[in-house]
Length: 547
Ligand code: C2O
Ligand code: CU
Image (cartoon, rainbow, N blue to C red; front, side, top):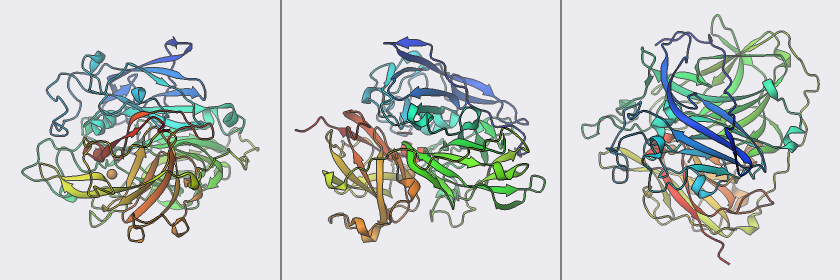
């Protein structure tokens, strides 16, 4: 459907209310339900799946040092909302079992393994059926990490892309007094924005492809129908559950918690002046001043001169000062081609790109604040010392393999198995608690991948071209392209472009009082959820301290 742009105001997700306490801590019960929701004024109601029946789900507000308990429950119908490809992991998924499998992962949380919400810890309605890794109903989040923009989303093995696309995602904001004392824009001036792309059928229902398009390598008689697709790119921008929305702001500073909640799409964002009647784009609008990324605050505010890049699941905590734009109209503009930094399609237009994300309407007047100055120093980001490294892992991102149906597989590999390992292969990444490691991700495929590690936050050391790095040699830190200022904080996702190696340093265990001593099994994977489902995911295990 050809939807008129900018007719609906961006909604703000509700804030979740605890239903009680457990062991003296807030206890939430969040139920996944199928509901009909108006995603655009002119679109018939869309059936979506939402936590607490809302798409996106309600925001959980948590405080550093105060644990929360959440029971994520499934009250979804027997049948999936979208066609399910039953060939994915069919050796370990009981597709003929009644009910829809779900499991909720708190992305960015330093979480005990039993509460991490891993792919095989799935459960169906009322916990009738549970997966092999299911351990408990009440998840425990210790919240012992710096304040950050976390989010929760579905992670069920083989159908994560479908469950997330149906709507199962929401924000989880972790705060503390230090951050409150920075006097950042708050209350109605702090807005979480989840950017997603969707496609719709005329009747308002969600459209999700079931055959591999020609642009994506072509369908083949041997493919199952429905089949997983290599990537998904929707033709409609959806922000906080509204299609092509507008955001009305006052001429003052705002804090936006940006989250890329799209299945595959990258965004490279900038605010530009915009003529609403003609749709013409003009000069630059106000810049993003980045104050935080995945794992919390940056050490100081960083103005983004070019574009703000966020890959699937990445967060950018930004402040935007609209003071000089009173009465103007801006557009949140994206110029990332769908197949990001890829050579797979021949041109950017092969697969739909999505230049206009949201309209921003700056009012003439409002509650202008003249103390808009951000503090120079936001927080202390302790550097993980390179001298403390116990181990270096060379990890490859590949596209050479195919599955039993001739479909391309993206696989993660190791120095020993450079062409990649399937998800079910035995654990190869097994640090001991207390270890510091460098993980060097070498992208040998033709597109960028946002690589995510559960449990930990890492720091980027730098990047270099594949050809300049020999995994047998020690990393020459001086030869690396250094991270951008906004890449210097704590991250749990890193984008690795084709032809490059990105080196990150990660500590498994306590570090300057920031992290928990968790051991056990976790996951690491590409966060383009089509890739994640189709085997670009591996377990890792933190073993007990070796000494
Ligand atoms: Cu945001 Cu393993 O996921
Ligand atoms: Cu990927």
